[in-house]
Length: 211
Ligand code: ADP
Ligand code: MG
Ligand code: MG
Image 1 (cartoon, rainbow, N blue to C red):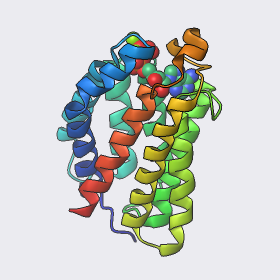
Image 2 (image 1 turned 90 degrees about the horizontal axis):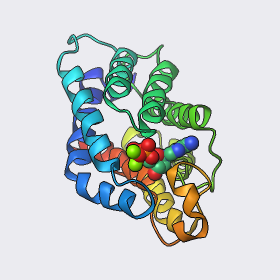
Image 3 (image 1 turned 90 degrees about the vertical axis):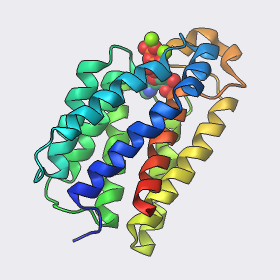
């Protein structure tokens, strides 16, 4: 049985919400350059809904149960294209750990991999299309590598570092998905906002776990 209890998991998600809200203006600025400028506001609305929903969670709720609660809150609150993408990520990540009370390193890596698969299944973007996928793919790959250490913190810190590298690398990509696709080559030179929000979430999860 691993170190991430349902209580710690919910604290990690509250922290993700706090850091998304703190990053709101940056996320909207990124989206203003290659999209419609709402990503920070969208994410703030979605994560405030998630935070409120988790505050109302029964104390004995499983991690899967909390993920379902987060998915519903996020989907109901967010109208933008990132709404169903993150909602599906939460739902599928939770389902991947439905047999767990606490998460060990392996279950955490499975949670991350299922989140990525959820975004892929929902949005049909491929790696290199300049989307949040491009942060999730290296995050999951590095998390898998860190599994050898057997430590939950090493896994989430590796995921965070992978997401950061992936986010930065989106600046070199030409968009083929979402609103920024219509800019074509002009989308180059700019970080994808969804890749940035993915990095913020994983960074917050790591920070909350390190405390
Ligand atoms: P909208 O584009 O509807 O305003 P947001 O601004 O909230 O929605 O989110 C934009 C982000 O959503 C993009 O930066 C990108 O990372 C992500 N995104 C858009 N379409 C897809 C897709 N098909 N697959 C994965 N991610 C996508
Ligand atoms: Mg937008
Ligand atoms: Mg929009």
